[in-house]
Every structure is written in C-alpha cells, then in structure tokens.
Image (tube, rainbow, N blue to C red; front, side, top):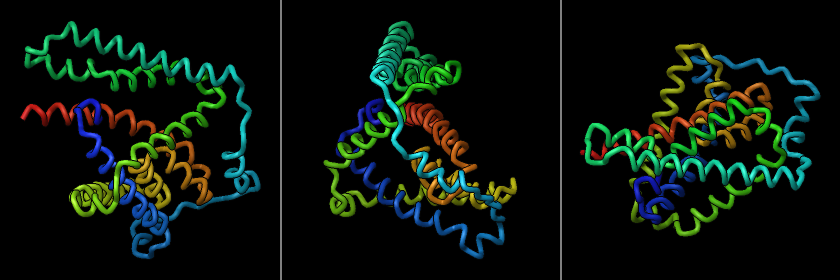
Length: 254
C-alpha cells in the first residue's frame, strides 16, 4: 500500500509500530473475552473435546520439518516468477489504458497495480495448483523468516516515544479500528449464533492475520479452528489489497 501511494517511510514505520502496540494490547483482551461473564451472556462457549493427538498438536506444528535444496529453489523461483509476470502484466495495462480518460483511469489504477497483480496471480495459482504449492517443503519456514526480517527492518526507524509525542493520532486511529472490529464481530457473532471462541479467532484473523490467529488457536488448544482462521486471515490479505487500492484511488480523486 505504501509503495502504491508513495507514503513516506517515516509514516509507514510509525503506523506499523502504532499498529503493533495496539494489537498487543488487543490480543490480551481477546484472550480474556471467553472468561468474561457478561460476554458469555450473549455468546455461548464452544465445547472443546481434546484427545492425545490434539494435546501434541502444538509441538507437531512447530517441530522441525524436512526441507530439501530443491524445495528452497522452487519456493524462491516461484516467488520471483510471480513477481516478474505480475510486473509485466501491470506494465502492459498501464501502457494500453489511457490515464487521461477519467472513466478508465480507475480501472488503470486497479489492473495496472503490480501488487494487486501479485495478489491475484498468487491466489489463482494456489487455488488451481494447490497440490504443487502445498507440497513445497520449507515455504512456511521461509515465509515466516522473511516476514520477521521485514518487521525488524520496518520497526528500526520508529520510536515509540516519538510516536506518542508527534503522532498520537496514529495510536488513536489504530485503537478506533480494532474497537470497531470487535464491536462488529461481536454483533454479527450474536446474530448468527457463533461461539465466543469462533468470534475471538475471527477478530484475531482480521487484526493480526493468519499467523497470529493460528498461534492463538494452537496456544488455546482450539485445534479445530486453526485451518479456518488461517484461511480467513489469508482471504483478508487478498481482499485488503483490493479494498486498500480501491479506497485510496477513490479518495485521491477528491
């Protein structure tokens, strides 16, 4: 999003740190929700039946896995190929769709955005070639490593004290986002009669993404919710890219 709209690096770093601060506090609240009596008056608890295999699920999930040199090569090659093809397609649409035409400029901004192309192509490949990509060893480990490096690099320029001093509205903005998310999730959870555990994990997947949601589900022993929250979190990433570009392009016209 930041590269799509040329957002200054300082603002991106401040936003990420603000988001992480609010998110850390919010996760503590989510963990506490299933034990709050007034919440349980509106949402029922899910009956969790544990067996020996479920008790060992956390250990099995995080244990070392076999990764071959071929797997690493295929993971990296597939990533590079997707990025390259996405860039070529986006450049093509940017060249054939006129920017001067107001009626087509929005379409140009959507299909000519390489990040949306990366998202779309990845989603299509993962859907129609799920066995190939699912069998790639090391993809989860490589992805987790790179995203941790990303978090470190993005957080280095940011200072919590400077954010509180110079950009307190970012903290307020993030707090509003998670508060609205919680209220909406609880409201629809009540309407559609979801259990409190399902509501908590849905909200976690919305705010933190599939990795934090899966980690919380494993830690709480809600093994039946691990796969659903990972799918919901990944779907959120896909939809978030589209809606982010859409809202950004729409607002920039005013």
